[in-house]
Length: 404
Image 1 (cartoon, helix red, strand yellow):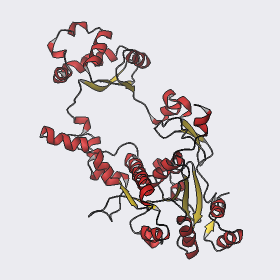
Image 2 (cartoon, one colour):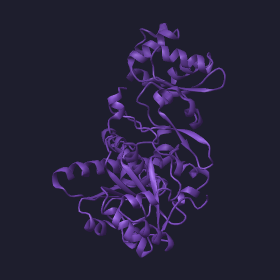
Image 3 (cartoon, one colour):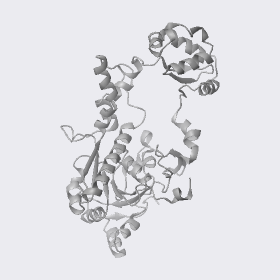
Image 4 (cartoon, helix red, strand yellow):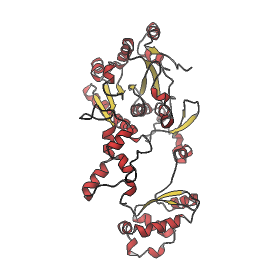
């Protein structure tokens, strides 16, 4: 990377974002914009802050995982003084993000109509369970919409619907929100005005079902769950190795098959018409898969991986999340970011999964303490020291972390 590339402003530098968000969907949108260079100000409830900070179990990493590169201000939006602060900040912002339950922002006096009247250039993004329509006022969660839109049915084996193993819909819904915001920012260059943007969990999940909906029409048959699917490829399975571990092998083209066949001593199949094309091999999978399984059992896991890489066929170890910490691909070029966890330990977490020229979408700020930036943010917005002191005395704002 050249010195000029390193000094070049990030793509969203100069864009000010107010984030009224919790959990994953909204914070993901804020994270993406922050990593891309926007000044994202996380507005947390005073005095306790985002409730996501205190979650445990499966959700213990939510806050630290999705709130880097942001600043925090703690406001009591239920007070007149706290709302007045939010209004003053919104009058100077480019984008507002919110993912509270339907109607909450109106009760807090920070809905689109109120803030747009203060700032006609404001782009206001609501991240909800549903887009406009008969379901729009329902509450939803990532897991709820996975069941609603067929994701859980497709993930689990027949009769055992399962949610996916990560909050993929929250993360995708937040990412789609950023696409809508970028569209609105571009349009504002022409119109000079902001607009309302909405992203939703349910419709994001339905979008993932596109291939299955189209497939049913093409085949005339209902799509079975993925574990029971009719495979489109001759070899697309996991196989056990000699040392009891597992490897996924995907032979999805005739070239893949030829390289696999030649390397593993299956020359006698070269002229067998049943093995000539992917389509003919799919028809004889009951014969083919035991052959591949027998080959896999002859090799230790790591040796088999090396061979598969050498012959250039798709393959993968069956990894666990913890295997990613030291993955050489993810760590190349410093792409794993050293993020400090609430317990003081540091975890290496993935960057945004994009490359844009020579931009460095790295770690500029650790996840903030509650209200850690309140004074700086208010001072930048034009509040005097006396005003800040009065707001703090009234309990409308909080500065610093109450645990410290």
